[in-house]
Image (cartoon, rainbow, N blue to C red; front, side, top):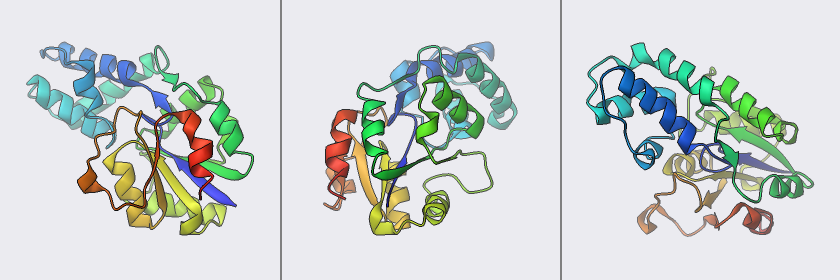
Length: 216
């Protein structure tokens, strides 16, 4: 059985606007000027704490990011599904893939928010396991979470694919020795030829995934 492990933001969902609105609400409340959506999207990928740290720094807000993290999480919780949507081609691609593979999720987003999004978008039942960034295991690009999912599914590295849109996901797959499929359509895709080894898979849209992952 193959194991397909998905990243969330920028791979499965377009959550740029909701994340940006929450970050800007925090920034403005503490005296900063709002940032462009794309600038905040570039800060996503290493967890909420890093997003808050980067947003405050970019907006010139001199405050302790650790102190303001709970406030950001509350602001984001209010906006979680206001504009966030599945990329076009989901959930049809997931339905096709789940017919001959185990699906799991590995994200640096907090688990509670992740589960609410999956449930709200109607795709939670398709994922056998979901790991968030606030559990006992280290966040990506540490490979511990990916290895944990592999062990749970009894999946070997050469039958496991990490599907993501960023260098964080690429580094996670390499650290675990799995295959990787990079979502060129994702807002975190800023991968240059110098980052690549030549054995990566690529998807230009979610509709490409069943065909591309059928190679593994």
